[in-house]
Image (cartoon, rainbow, N blue to C red; front, side, top):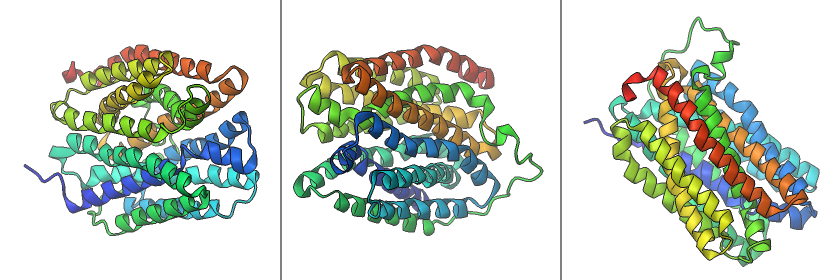
Length: 391
């Protein structure tokens, strides 16, 4: 059997870890930073933070096209370099406007880097191990998700200095750039005689229902990840549990990835997706229905377990409906949809929290996830039309 854990795959995994670590080190604390440093209100915080996701959303389709049409490693390295340099610009942003500009611009290289790096992972994986390799690829992100928020909160509580956090993120992102710079990948034949500006070069039309489904779940996670710290402190009276919440979430993600590999290898993508969506939905409902320690610490395990099952299944599904020369487009479609959901979720969470309250905002999240569960019936039908053997 072909070797799964080859050196190039490990480098791509390391870069994926650094991308996520640098992001999640700051994400839970940025609402507090904007509130304390600039006196920003809840709706302003939502607007500023949503710029990152919106820019990533806008750049994803073009980055997928670039990753398919030009030397992938060069596209990846340029994107990664810009990504880690933006962390240095946070240190120079002395006003709310400047910070908002930097944060919005930062979403561009982040979106391009994640598309190019995940597509590079497919390139360095042997075809016989690709399905399970995609499943394991997300573990590097999950580990970063587990430890980065806890480390960020610990550093802030110990020092009260946000600049230290920005420096840590800058250095970690730089390590990822250096790791991918050493990747050895075979030259591939570039796309020729393609309609450069045709719509299907930027968005995989065959995977539109998968994209809608993942966007609905992105809305939910956008609200959760950006407003958890303030919600738990103001509404639930839990002031020191954010790090533990994200740790439990990541534990659920990792356990699902590991236990779900056998099912992925067997091609049971629809089963993995459906089970994951069910568990994640239960988790979101539990979180808002039980505003106490039971809901607060039980929900992340269920949400993590669910996301860890449906995310690699959705990624394999959209790659399966794409042609070989559309892998970058397929990845960008999935990630674009997720970013769209995140951006909508962040803005929605800020508006609802400001005008109605955090409790209503998280009830809305549970409702959106239920809509995603219902929409999966359409996604399943569309996928089986392209892959009838999986019925």
